[in-house]
Image 1 (tube, rainbow, N blue to C red):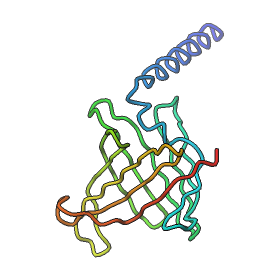
Image 2 (image 1 turned 90 degrees about the horizontal axis):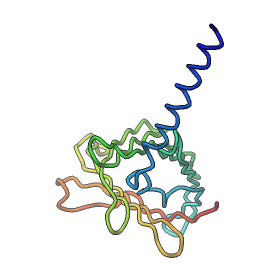
Image 3 (image 1 turned 60 degrees about the vertical axis):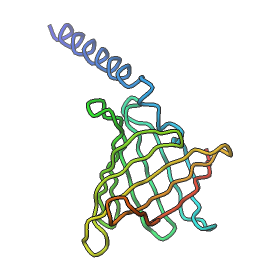
Image 4 (image 1 turned 90 degrees about the vertical axis):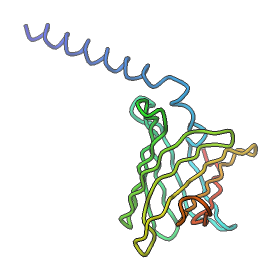
Length: 164
């Protein structure tokens, strides 16, 4: 009886794992794959930090782990939300920031945006664009807007150089 129960559990487990993997095989789940890898990040001509981008959870989720030379650290989880038909990023860092961004791939790269607060607690709109370049770098442009997207201010511009 125990062997039969364990066999049923194993079959169910393996079946679910295969189903989960196939659920994330659509092209939508690969739209951000250009960012996967280990990167040396440069900003304003200076070394800014390292970023490790990996696919996890059967390739359904992209995990970002960023470490700046200043000691600043952040992590994000990125997934294609099939119900909303868009990408979602949840960013957290060691300064207590939470960003929740949504968007999709366009001709130039991935563009995600969402609401937040500036350093004075006033509402702003954040927009981050990742653009793969022909020299195998990825350019990340993080901007904010205090006027609902009428004008934008650059918060960070990083160039990702692939290590691996």
